[in-house]
Image (tube, rainbow over the protein chains, first blue to last red):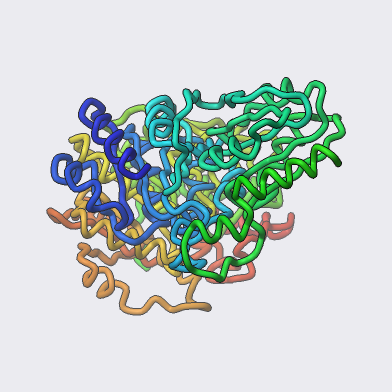
Length: 294
Length: 263
């Protein structure tokens, strides 16, 4: 997805004289061509995330379209108050593009993990949150909204699904129809969910946009059902309030498979963490059967 | 402190200070001494150096009040420049008011940044100054910060950035009212900024001549800071340099005394 980010950006900046990019000393090699070609608008601003958000806010206020890029915990957690005030409260646009997701930097330890990013940013009114599951989805979503004047967060991850879906900003894709359960799959976990649900009588709703949440699609899918399984590649429970608010007074059972709220102190690879947490088709299939029979 | 204020501006500033005291009394809200320490700085800026501008005029100079708790001084200047009415000024901090304890850029077109949390405005100003360079706009960005605000790391991040990007269209005004001294004393500030690659001018922040000439002291390729020595609560003896008054509003007896002193 990172490569796609570079190529999408390179293609857009050729035509868009307002587009600009601030790198916090991350992705500098990848964006070397843009830095050389547009040194005024594409720059390695340095390792100062808080001020970078403020600077981008000033740029946005002055009519430019800033993109800010670094690793998720530094972009979201370190500079959270700046995002809240300098973009959220001011009500002006920007594009925050992170890498690292929950634990893409598994071997670097918890300083570089960020399973809380979506849960945190959800608390900033007006923030748009996107979790593309494939490079082509990033490309289409970014092109669709990068200049919509709103603060937007794109959560890139190393993992992506084998095939892309035709995604639209703010819309869920109904990828499988069934009667027993609605499964919500977020971004890059789709492939394991599809495999786990093979032969099962379930709906699969695929979300590449978290906020604004497509509650209409969920409501429709849940018309005759009361059970939801959500596979969320960030802290477990992040999606719960969106689901509950969408379904208002309906009694529902929600089973979440997500990152547990604990420091993941092991190192190793993303796959090892996936296996430990249960982001595997085998585990999801087992939990799915349990929920169907519950 | 110098006392070269001409009669007419001095009178008008005192009128505005009295309005500030009155609205703080009626609302029982506001950081009055923080507003009084910057009244002269803002008066010269708005009346003699730059125009008050709507934000859609991209080519105009811009002002950011980074120390948002000085909002009453900013609102007083908006009142002075007829950007808000006396009735609006009197609504300060009421439920439906446009004028909060800290300024909201979504409610006031002449306010370019919502501030209140310290250490935000300078970075925003750096972004604006960079944008002016990128977009070839010949204007100046003024940003007023406080000395207590200089405890924030984000201020020093922005100081680094402004020098690195040679933002000679940026003027930072430091309201050096020493309110932060009880925590961290900012020693050798001039040397600090010089060593960061800024142009520096130290002035008496209540002397209009010094203020006016300092706002024009730009140096090519360097961001510029005016370190303005001020008195917190300037003009009202009971408030001057008193921490107790930081966010205290006068009662009726105190208001009468303040109004009398400002007469």
